[in-house]
Amino acid sequence: MKVIFLGVGEAFDENMPNTSILVISDKTNLLLDCGCTTPTQLWKFNDDQLFLDAIYITHPHADHYFGIPALFVRMWEEKRKKPITIICQKGLRKVIKELMEYGYKGFAKDFKFKINFIEVEEGQTIQFNDLKLSFAFTEHSASNLAIKINDGKKSFCYSGDGEFNEKTEELYKNSDLVIHEAYLYDEKKIGHGCITDLIKMAERNNIKCLALTHINRFLRRKRLESIKKRVSNKKVKVIIPNSFEEFIL
Image (cartoon, rainbow, N blue to C red):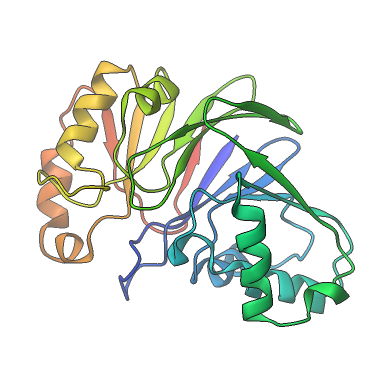
């Protein structure tokens, strides 16, 4: 299983694309979140309109799902016929369909590919092709479901946005990789991750590697190099990836 960091930025960073992760397994190409800047990042990586099998949306904030209309209309324009699946929490199916209409009114009725929806809940585990997917809420301003992905050999988690809690920690436990929103370094901001707290959480839950994304744009510009030095000698391996970096599980 391979993980590609298509984007690692927060919502309003003009220099970094929105955080979005591509998962490539033996049988599945799965996109985790599809913000405003994600489609162009995906097309730079692979412009085959048949490439994606599914998209998982963690929560309904623009930097995590507003890219869907552009992505789908390009698929339609390039004559995709292969179905695609959107996995999301209960209630988001209607929201995503409405977004499609707001973005490109009337286009969806002409799509030659079927859009299948799988709506999930906290504590649920589903099988999608060769991947087992499990979910838990984080603490965020919008309802956000973190996801754990297991291919039978390795497992990794992606937070979307928000602070971890007891149920999230249980989801993350013993993972080979946790990709987590890390908005600030050692300051608490309700609904966001804090790097120092995330490292402690990773250490107590036997996480092999912690990848920090969605870092505040001002923090990234002014203190990124010093933060990299501070996190380099921890018990858990900590990485701060750039766009298009790959992680092999």
